[in-house]
Length: 141
Image 1: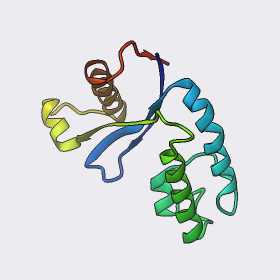
Image 2: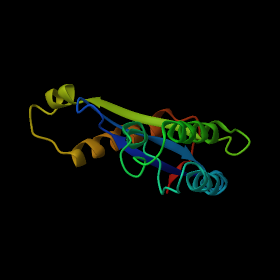
Image 3: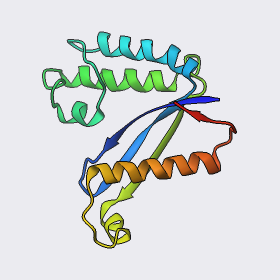
Image 4: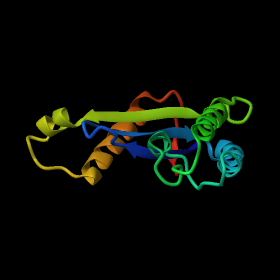
């Protein structure tokens, strides 16, 4: 079974580092992605290329020219697509978070970079998938 994972990091407070995203089969993504792009194109006063919740909430570009209602509509539309079981029944949320203060203690005080945090989060995600995932025979794409 092939699995595709789309994820992004979130370092909103500087205290926590998270990699979170969704996994699905390639055929599920083939149905989901066009609808997602359509939603990004058709919601709001102008088309955007990506949804970043922190930028939407903070009214940062490209959402700085959007009204509060347009930004709220984008969030509602994004959540509706993610929850649409008729579109993608096998869309699984997955994440890994580190409290950076605790992470530094585990790292014995060594200075770490964003790349180090990413790499460690992906290791944890991969380990959990291999050891705890309900499906066997996963091939990562």
